[in-house]
Image 1 (cartoon, one colour):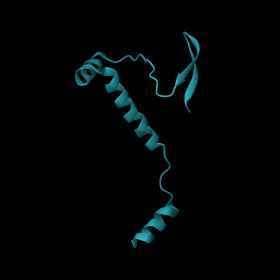
Image 2: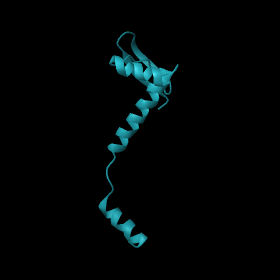
Image 3: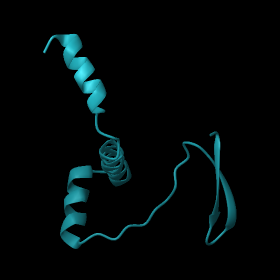
Image 4: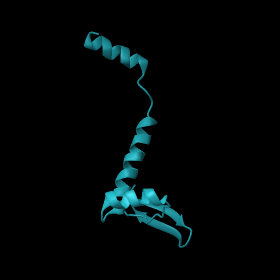
Length: 81
């Protein structure tokens, strides 16, 4: 999909090209914010984007169905187990 449409609460309808960035505001406990700033150096946005992308990918993998028992048996038979 080359573009995504949406509605911005402040600006009304919006069209964004895929790959564009969106500004988000998050609230963190003081100690976590300090740890993030220290770990991220001058690129808190990049650090957060990397961590959030990893979290989203892990969640997507967890939502995948498990192996089909029929295929597991066939694979084991093919391997000679």
